[in-house]
Length: 321
Ligand code: SF4
View (cartoon, rainbow, N blue to C red):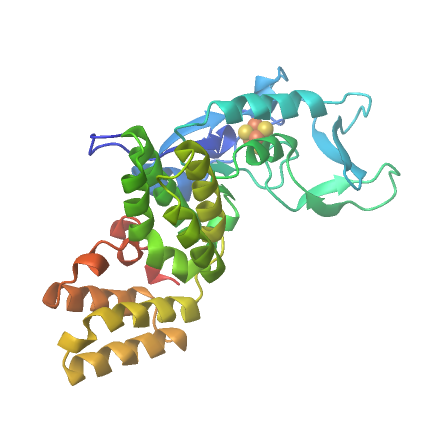
């Protein structure tokens, strides 16, 4: 990743979403947004856990069965076939190989790959399933990799969740680049400094938590601190940035240049921030104006903030939120 300007974030993905015919029925679940839009910016590496543990294609379906924490993956037609341990252990093996990955897109509803709200069937056949499970493989990956952004292809159709996921992917990508170049207390502080306003727009409590942590860089074990830092940061960014929080950050930013802005500039900026808060314009509108003012009134600290452009503008993710 380092030193190579062509480097792109590497993401794991459920193989069937790329159009590979690996599903139990011999089909696929090709997702065009993923391949045709996100595929321009990300390198995808496909995983099909069910095929990887030795199941054929096509195959008999499997499903989550159980109650409480005792959920297992069993054959739908033959409940004596139990794939729980194989899927978990494959998930742990894959997780251990994801050091340079920046995200993972999984297939919703799958008893192996789903992230949430997967149907869990009760032992008693007549009881209806409840949507409260996670795919066995994906649970293992997420547990071992708490820093990794994971999202379902279905949830990516929601503009807010999509933008949030892509922000997390690019943040982790920038982090992986810094780590690959050799993390130092100074590079950790600089990384944090440049992400401050982005984090503030997502979760103020994490923003307040990370300041004192980063202040300890240079004292003690840097690797342990860096690990705690990135996991905490990535979990903080899971909180979606609301219009109110975005407005708060824009006001903070304006505070740094307001002495150089004319009264007319300020009125124009405040009007657009308010219009965004009222839901009249997407966040890209006040951010574009803020970037315009920052070109006119440059500010070294603010110009470096990733909040202003956390992902490629061509993805147009902020045009819809
Ligand atoms: S959802 Fe997962 S296990 Fe099922 S076919 Fe797709 S990649 Fe394979």
